[in-house]
Length: 78
Image 1 (tube, rainbow, N blue to C red):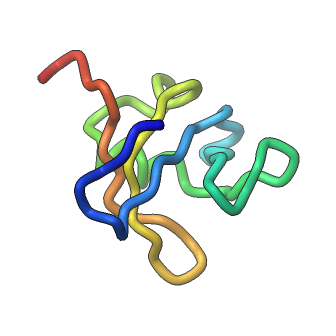
Image 2 (cartoon, helix red, strand yellow):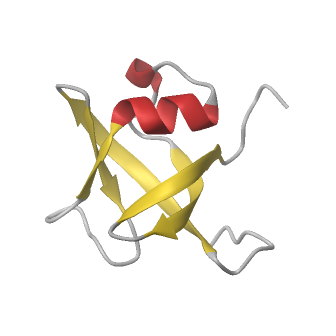
């Protein structure tokens, strides 16, 4: 499993986007009950268009009931 050097960050995966909302699998939310996050937030943090989010994995930090600071894992641009 991919790990981030900062233990506060977790690995998440975007399943799909619908109407501006990304359905995200996290350690606490599986594919049957994904966390819903604004796709624009992930796209902004990761520097990707929202239509390129599905299927990708990111590091993210927990923030209240949501996530923040999305960083693309295995970014081919780097």
